[in-house]
Amino acid sequence: MQATNRSKNGLCGGIRSAEISTVVRTIFHLDMDAFYASVEQRDRPELAGQPVIVGASPDRRGVVCAASYEARAFGVRSAMPSRTAWKLCPAGIFMPPRMEAYRQESRAIMALLADFGGQVEQVSVDEAYLDMSHHFASFDCAAAIELGAKMKSLIHARRHLTASIGIGSNKLLAKIASDHGKPDGLFCISENEKVAFLRTLPASAIHGVGKVTSDALAKRGLITIGDIQDFTGDLRSIAGSFANQLKLFALGEDNRPLEFDGTIKSISVEETFERDTQDRKILVPLLMEQADEIARKLDKEHLAARTVQVKVRYSDFKTLTRQMSVEDPLESKEDIYSIACSLLRREKLVQRPLRLLGLGVSGLGPPSTQLKLPFESPS
Ligand SMILES: [Mg+2]
Image 1 (cartoon, protein in one colour):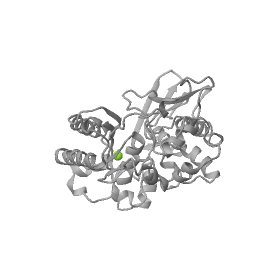
Image 2 (cartoon, rainbow, N blue to C red):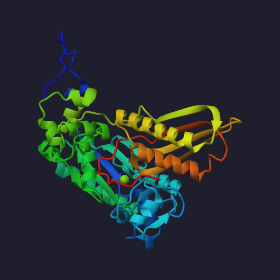
Image 3 (cartoon, rainbow, N blue to C red):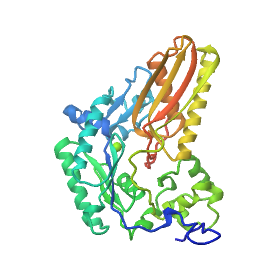
């Protein structure tokens, strides 16, 4: 790989930090398996092996927050309307979310991870990157897997939950490795094999390749990561300013450091009406537009969200906000819209005219690299 934007007047002006080679790190990505549903199954042993669906009851309008693997096998997933989930999986056991219990569990797991030393970047309630480089003289999959196995068995012994751990020389590879091994996975991508390993994966498995970028790549025939590795044309015309980074990612190169304070915490938009309104014909299209705007911003920043928040202000300036969190990161405008609608209905926020309507997302982190199943959009 070569520095592609060498400065005109030389003297290392054009070398970007991502292209300076550094010591090979050992990065773990830990992701709890079907976290919310697994906590429910652990706390109520009669639910073990059952299709557990955490979220609204199917006889009420509302959405799924999380689903156990048994329910996922039927195509149930986060942000899907509960009615749709019930149609797909009539035997599903629906349970209301217990967010405080999940947060408490999260703190207990993160405390166990702290015992292994090294830097930890907690990405969400059930996901973290860990820099374990200090345990090893150099990057070595066999030794790293041994440490990963210890970590997994400690979590299982103390918390009775399973985690998937992915290991690689950077965040990109570690995340792909943990998704690859799921559930109860432990998988390492070696430096020698990383380029070959990535070849067959879809382009969308690369961090930052959302729907817009993957559609643009597909139009030019770039379907797999291998296609991007081999592409000799002008990637900038397809992926814009992301092109250099994309090529490096496709080759398994990623120098992003672990972060302890994400730069963007939330994204939100709001609109004040000229005249207060509770007319669905005005509110529904506006909410869709807002969801679309947020989804575009997420895509641009290569982020996904776990929490959706709605905000309303009434004629008397009384302002309310309500939020809902789901387990799998959300990227699409349909999912964001679906949750926002569900919140407005559940909390009966539009029973009198609104002066303002706002929509926001937080709990931002990397998008899921798992392939998603299509589902019918909310009516
Ligand atoms: Mg998880």
